[in-house]
Every structure is written in C-alpha cells, then in structure tokens.
Length: 345
Image (cartoon, rainbow, N blue to C red; front, side):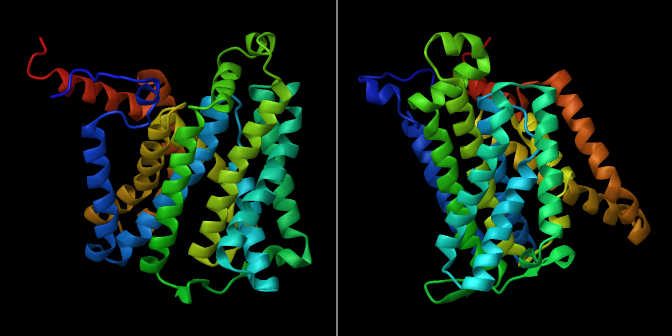
C-alpha cells in the first residue's frame, strides 16, 4: 500500500517517476519487454512491433491534439512522408538505417510546420479540414511522381544495423520497441519543460496564453513540428517493418484510427497514448479471433473489414459520453483505490 510520498526537494517533486514502487514496476516492465521475444511466436512478435509503431505515432498526435488542443486528421500523411523518405533513401542512396529514420522524421516535421501555418487563424473543425486536405495532397504527391514509384509504390530491402539484416519480426523488435520507448520518454519529459507547459496553456486558453507572453504561432508550429516528427519516425519504422510503401498505405482512415486511439486512451496523457494505441490495435485482432471462434470463415472476415471503422467511431462516441478522460483515467482510479486499500470505506 502507498498512500503518499514525501518530497524533500524540487528535483524530487518534478521527477517523472517519484516512488520506489514505480521504479520496481518499470524494472519489471523492462524485463518483460526484454524476455518477450524469447517466449513469443512470430504472430505475437508481429503484433508487438505493430503496436509499438502505433504507440509512437499516437504519442506524437497526443502532443498536438491532447496537449496543445489542435485537432489533426493528417497523422497518416506525415507517417507517409516519413515512410517514403526512408524508402527513397534506402533504395536510391543506400544510407544507413538510423540516419534514414531521422531524415524521415525531419521531412515529416517540415511538412507538419507547413500544414500548421493556418493554425493561428483557424482552429477546431476548420483546422481538422485543413489537415484532411493535407492528407489528400500527400496522397496525390505519392501517387504521381516517378521517384515515389507512382501508384505501385516502392519495395525496399531489409534495414541493416551493426551488420545484421532486420528481415524478421524478431530482429525488428529490437529496433522498433527501443525507439518507441525513447520516444515515449521524450514525450513524457517534454511536458515538464517550459515548452510543454506553453502547449498546455495554449490548449486551456490560447488568448490568455498570448496575454501571458506566449507567442502562439511559434508554439503552435513547434507542436505541429514535434507531432509530425514523431509521425515521420513511426512511418519510417513502418516502412522497415512492412518493406512496401504505397499511396494506399496511409489513408484517411489511418488518421481516424490514431485520433480514436488518443480519445479512447486519454488525451493529454502519455499513458493514454500507450493504452489507446494498444487497445485500438488489438480490436481488429479480437474481431478476427471472434470470427474464428464462430466459425464464420472468409466471408464473415470480409464483411467485418469495413465494420472496423464503424467500431472505431462507436468507441469514440462511447468514450466521449461515458469516460471522456479515457482508459488512462480508469487506470488512475484503479491505482487510487489500491493506494488506500484496505483502509478505504
């Protein structure tokens, strides 16, 4: 039981993990992540890599929408920019894997800053429409230039690091999961800084934030840039994971997926990004498992494929009505209950 923690310094009060209990759980989680590849089969390794990529991208969208209050439906476009950058560099230039990933993030960040310019004048639904337009523009660019492979896209060779080809889910796991963990730590620490607090001030009341001396355009563009950088890195990981990049790989429905993930998980929370992305990634897999248990076969699987978007929409509506703070708040309530147990009335 833990009912309180004593802070003896400002550094301790600002610490990201503030108790021995949290440190112990983090150590257990790290051990679980390290041991998982040795006990999981190829299917579960595939799912783990896919979940990690989605968590990374959802964390980026949460920076923009959850913490800064700027609604975006362009996350798929920025992931596409990162994926195509990685694919082109890998195929045309043969540059190393890690510089390719960084380049993908930077290119996506530039695209995000450009898309974010109207954010000073428009917000809410109008800003969402601007980001939707960016998705269609990106799709047009991907499909109509020779160096992007046109409508057929690009097929890239396996990534290579330290002389090892990353051609299996097991090997990719050791790239994707550590990169995602670093991105999550970066996102969590961001909101302990002046920049992160400026984002939160803009979300809560942008006019008051400007009165307090926060330059709105600079910080909104910075939020767009950081969010897009995360999306570009996630897109680069996606390209190395699937090794085929086409214009159809990053549809508008993917952006809706990530928006649903942060709403279901909890906006304005790094934990919400994790829980939401895991939950939304596993929903289709649970549907497939249900179909197998019912013995529906191929026809029922084809029927359920478009129904997935309906389920995503239903989850968004349900969580907005019944639990607007998402899965992260359910987790916090559960923690608070056990912090006081058995002395709770």
